[in-house]
Length: 461
Image 1 (cartoon, helix red, strand yellow):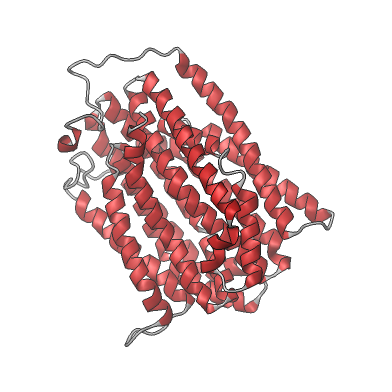
Image 2: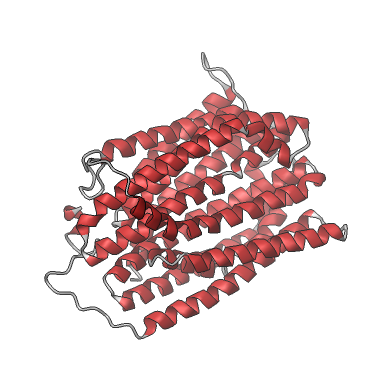
């Protein structure tokens, strides 16, 4: 297990590193357009977690069903589960796209009263809204392949889309030759177009099971309402968990609204960097843990379930302890490439110092939540995230009522709420541990299925 988790997490690490470049590249290029453009784009990018939450509401249910069926040897169930996940992701993605396009200006105005920020943010949001559809499809498809142990294909698809996005960003933002300069809207179109090609790649690979015969887009086509309900019953709490996080981000921007564009831009910049770090280091380990826990739970191999959780926690905490030491060494260095204005750089550096202190202990939430998703028990992590949201809004409301709300105090409350969520998840982990402590370790027979990490499984898949 100490070697297995890094082996599975490495492709995810590459994928999340590349995905993080979406937002970071946008921040780098758009920052050259000024603070209003950066603030407007930051407001638009806040929808990312909502879109991912919808994808997780579908994908987490699919992960639990697919991984457990694979581990238990029920291979015949897998194509049907995959087809039902496809129906759900297409419907949800199309609905989000339409909702975003129709409400772009109204959404940006809710978070800013600055006319220039509203104009820039609306232009970005309209172009960016198509990516709501593509992000849901890419996320659910990647989760389905990871559930069966294929961590390579999602990395390859993400690599291609990121490479295209990096090429399109400066071209569409600043223009070149016959291509007009679209400004901040160009960043939105770059993401939407590059991810659209990623969706086409998944379609080509899943038709008739060209990558994996168990994950094939083929008939008979029918909607199984019972299976879709099962996927949503398991997955919606996982999606709600991320949605609560996004609501807290929306609330933070709303509370900061009176402090002006610099505070909004700094908060957006700091959040993008932290989200990139959690995606890069935390979610790569967490997704490996979720897959391992789900498959071994299906095979009733309790000792491997416990080992995956323990080693996942160890890798997460060690990684973020190093990250925080680097932040303390020079926080300004992390934000300097993404902000020209000194005021924005200083505020964003303060955010990293305050929030970064909570990141190592937050591994209790990330890893335990991943393990819970693997076994199909996503309600406790959702409850912990709700506690975080309530604590954040209560603290900010109290500061506002006392006329004591400042940027640093808002960030301090956000950091304290992360500690509270980690404490709740520590209790969840204790309950899970007691459940598995005395569980029997299954003995594999010749008839039992091989797990995807065993020798020879790559050729089978």
